[in-house]
Length: 433
Image: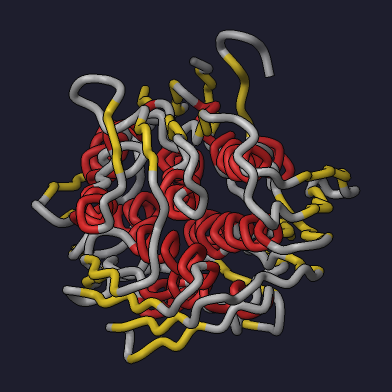
């Protein structure tokens, strides 16, 4: 575990926001399922992205990596059509997206496969898939007592109707959307409850269309999928990530000017709503075609429904704490099953830094404070908690000590370098800077 000491400094400058992790997963998988060569550019090789690349390699894809000048990568992917399971075990590490996306794809072929993972991933909810397994006569077995992973599976998906709860995680729906078009007959995904995290499904459908897969979205309640389709190879550039950009937009709001580049304002990313949230709270944000410029602003508390943007909660906890009045976060119960229990973790770290946050069953009640005091906190092995702590340090009176700073490697391995480039100051207490 890496421990660092952060000295409070104002952050300011111009930064190219990292590429979208959500889009990258989908583009890599789609290219991996195509017959022929695709080139995916502007990919950040975080631990989650490595997990997805390794999973597609295990299914027969070939991936060549070329580093770009800015630390991003271009991937040349030779697709695995037809699927050929190269190794029985697929290691998803701590990537929930990899886990839930890959399971239906593995079930396109009949060989026994073992899906495994690390950390909290072994206990992430999987009930929607188990219900499908039972209905479709797919054999499965938990190989470790009292945890979902490793999961052994044997059997194949068949065309038909797939009923699934829309309120657990859109990742289950996306996994089926990847696989069902490749079956020999037509299929329908029917949601048994309201679709949560709709923007993630929109991203999936956009990427699938780019790679030649057509799916009809019937009012976000049914997805009509023609069988016997094929992924077509192509070139694809991954756009900047509003989930990561949110940290720098808040840094500008509570600190000084931040110019955030490579943010597509026509994007379907759900976390693009951070712009609207900050504006509603009083943030001064100038919007251009592919960039956002934010200035230091006095923000006011508000009520924020995070059902469509749960990943924003840790950084919303920071800006809410530094806003006048009370900020209430609602409809975030799914956050308790992320890399950490993010409602608990957000309240824990910010309260230890001098905040005033109360947990509710599905959210947070955040009472504004004049600033943070500083203190000693842990990342809870959660990349978004670690980054939120770093941004909170801007407005701390004293130094912030963070245990588990390496958690950022899951999604943003160059975060601390960018933090330094924008004026941040930190030292490693256990192994040097």
